[in-house]
Image (tube, rainbow, N blue to C red; front, side, top):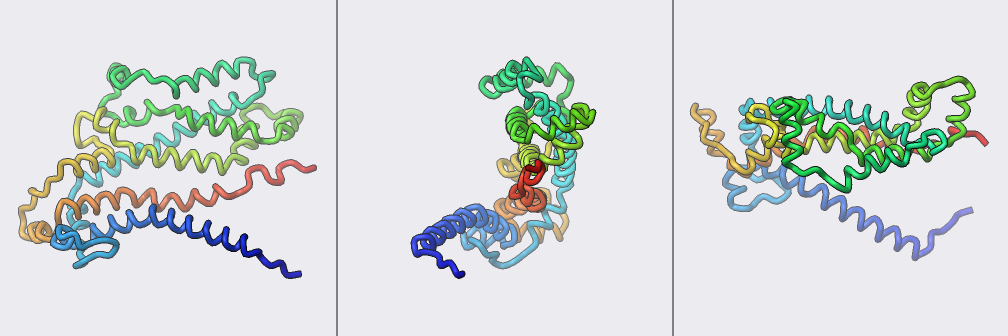
Length: 295
């Protein structure tokens, strides 16, 4: 039997598709514009002739970026920060969310500890006490100053503990009957079933560490220790194209401007996140506990 879609349903789908296409364009076109700027010549960019397609195509801006050792050094620091920060954040998030997801009968002080964490979202200690604490712990100008202050992401803990509370209690009870302890339940049941939630939290953590720039400016005493976002912030606000001495680099200087080099560095800086995102996105649409409990 062939089911025909009504006119109102087709119209509704058409409007939805149009809205989604528009929203996608609003997210995608700025990236295309930055890429076009980075691949265009200095004259065309200065004249404002570049929109979504390169004019007078050239790799000069990327040659300039490749000549900047500080750019890749800052990227290495950011990669180190992302790896350390993500591992620490996920470990502490799991260790906090699992006990907090228990019922009051299993964990009597659950509500007290939940509010202990939630209150840190509602009230902050302030920038100066935060800085002095890090300074007194002798963490300034080290990678740990970028990782440890945000090691316990309360928002992610709340997301994950609510996700854990949605898992069927029958699995936990069955594991208890079979003699499994909390570590075995967490590692063998909760984590495998939490792949979509963990993928989402991982993406939040990676993007947060990668894009964070303000703490790098405050906590690093030397520009050589800046993470990539802090370095890009200084480049965008205080560009310096006066270091061209040899004839080849002078030729490059004639083809680039502050806008093209900024665009090139920003695009290279966002590229790793754009490459990582598709691998995590597929987990968002999967079923969470489908088929884990049989009727």
